Image (cartoon, rainbow, N blue to C red; front, side):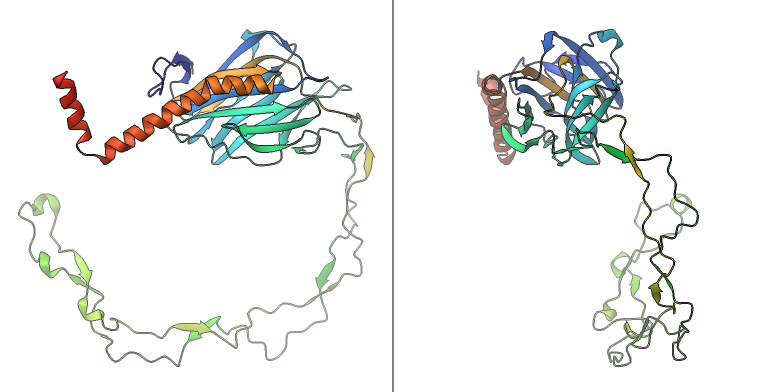
Length: 383
């Protein structure tokens, strides 16, 4: 699919343009290169912030950003396989979640690995309002995730991601296999046990409650449903050649209201004699060795992480599958300053949200007043 630049279907502020997903059931990909690489580490915080509006709601679509890992800058070759520094934003297809994923690069192997925030966070997208998504990655390894300026998740990169950013010193040996003679069943059936003589496997789980008697008013010979007496004849427009033989609709039999109709049977209750299928009791297995686990070996990819910093960023991209249309991205910001991001949000998002709230309240007031539309038209005609 191809993004469009436009105002969308229902902008709260006239002329306010964004990046719009115009069609559903398509892949969308777009990337932009930064003027210079966004460096990380040292005393630099990194802030990623953008606005998102779902004009048609959110059923099954991604709407997240990818911060492209430096030094990649060949946008014509950008695909979903290109390494990224951070992936952040809503994604819903069944489960509604807000992605926060980072990639690390192993200095020994050069391979990249994904690490997902363990805490589940709902995106709050899909209510037709613009939402502001902000990620603050702090220089000390902390992070804060905010929606509409309110924190919804916070923690530490080294502690709150899965798999952990710190590789383990040891791993399970992939070439170690459980011996055939290894016994890991702690319990086994007692071969010496014998089913008791009084154990009856044929007893049913439930039996009729013999203490309940059929009500005197019960109508054995009456059906539960009868033809509707108020529809004794076919409608005037009924054509038997086209519609078939007319039959009146069935309605509950009023004679059944007092107690019931048809074949009566007592309710079922648990059978005190029921025991079910017999099986021998379990005893300790004399040959039990224990739970088998592969041996540990040194991790060839191990390296020590003292303090993790997200990878430097060379650009920003959108790489999504969308089963919804009318997804509007706007005011994407990447900065080192949380204060600057907050100020920018006050000048953009908060103004837009105030306009949306006012528009929604006005629409609700008109829908609750049946004279609102005629009076509005009358006012225009008088003008």
